[in-house]
Image (cartoon, rainbow, N blue to C red; front, side):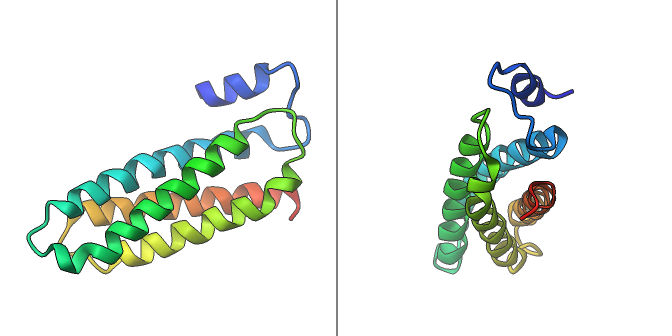
Length: 135
């Protein structure tokens, strides 16, 4: 069991209206994506052809911000997760856009390949959580 899931299940307000495994996996994927996208943007800033990386950097940073907000909102226990559906959908969409952008650079920049993988995982975790919420 992950620490996030431990925390969610131990919260006195409870989270009975959502699948705890899917919720914990989504929160973990969001925060992993925050770190990966932030690191990718930083790595892009060190590339020789910085001008070619501007869109990638911006997309990385946008994705990191959306994932951060989503992870924080989802970590609040005892709520009606149906109200977070639009945020979860936005997170999945931001991750897909970021993955698509990073994949354009993945053959030349390993950090972009890694970032795209994290973004795909986060989008999949968001989709899985949405299925359990019944959106």
